[in-house]
Amino acid sequence: MRLTRHLPASPEEVFDAYTDAEKQKIWFSILDEQPGIVEIEVDLRVGGRQTAIWGPSPDQLFRETQTFLVIERPHRLVTESVGSGPDGLTMTTRVEVTFEPEGDGTLVTVVQSGFPAVEVRDFFTQEVWVGAFARIEAYLRRGTTTANR
Image 1 (spheres, rainbow, N blue to C red):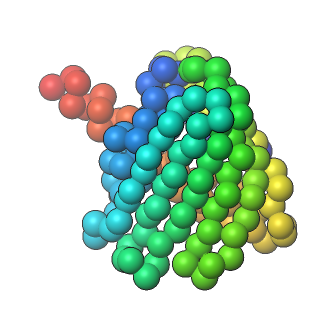
Image 2 (image 1 turned 45 degrees about the vertical axis):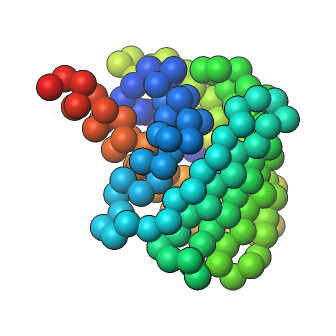
């Protein structure tokens, strides 16, 4: 799976929003109508891990642990991701994210591989990453609006 999205901030700002635990805690739920559960810890170093637990309630939690394989701040990040949903099913994928300056912002490209089925890949293409990009963009726009006041 390969997706791209232009985001309204510098590569440094987008990279930090994507990798900083405190920033992630904000954008993970920025578009939610009801507050849910968001717990994130990040050890941003090669071999380090990011652990995220989120969902609407304690019985509907998603979990993801990413191990950082490559970190080239602010241009490239490669992880091995192990995720599970409330149903208990798990999946391991490889995720490569690049951050390239483009005009007045950053072109973010995500390449994710290792999906167990085409339907899962399509769900990530049409829902998961679209939602993540929308949340990160809302976070970045909010930061820009606040800074310009």
